[in-house]
Length: 145
Image 1 (cartoon, one colour):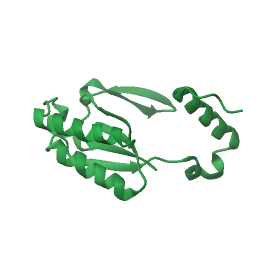
Image 2 (tube, rainbow, N blue to C red):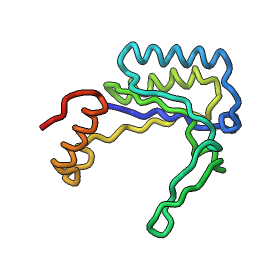
Image 3 (cartoon, helix red, strand yellow):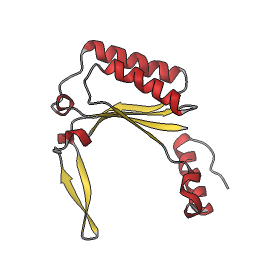
Image 4 (cartoon, rainbow, N blue to C red):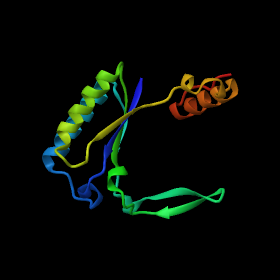
């Protein structure tokens, strides 16, 4: 199963206060170990919300709202996409990342990534095939028939 591990933004990360050398070294060590074990699928730190924007509904269309955004506790400072065997394994990796973070962020939230089966009958065979081909293109695999 896959999880997204979201590092919550803090006032410091939103002000682009740089993590310490110790924190960067420890976090890259954990990320490297996750990669070596085949757990890490993707992971990046994010710039502050002042560098971002949102699309919000506005009368049936999308309106662009530029950052920064006020609610720091709702923002993400970084993420990892991991593939693990269980919730407990995801938690163990998150605890290691939390320790390596040294308080640079406001905590870590984990959310399981939905699979095709989570969508039930609304995810039609045509949509499933389209999704399979989309990921085949991304991964450089032959398209399914």
